[in-house]
Length: 105
Image (cartoon, rainbow, N blue to C red):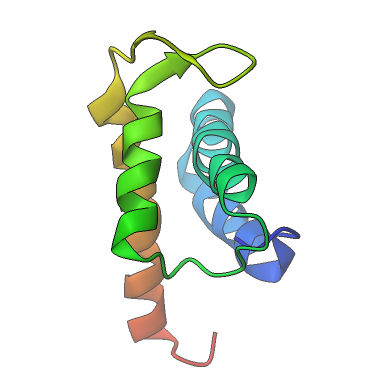
């Protein structure tokens, strides 16, 4: 999702919405927008692709592993670290599957 999620970012949530309750959809949006993309934009200004270099992906996972204060300092380990990763993994898997189903999209 580039800085302006454009059609792709909105399309993802729109596509998922019919199968989810409101709370689940908000949780996905929170995880993808705040814990994933916002973090990447803060630490890698100008990022405009979901194709992440291995070092960018690794650094993001390292940051995600801890709850942080307003200045970005780690406070404590994130208890639900693995479950937070599931949202991003599902996002990438959905996009890959959709690309196979409709390459023009």
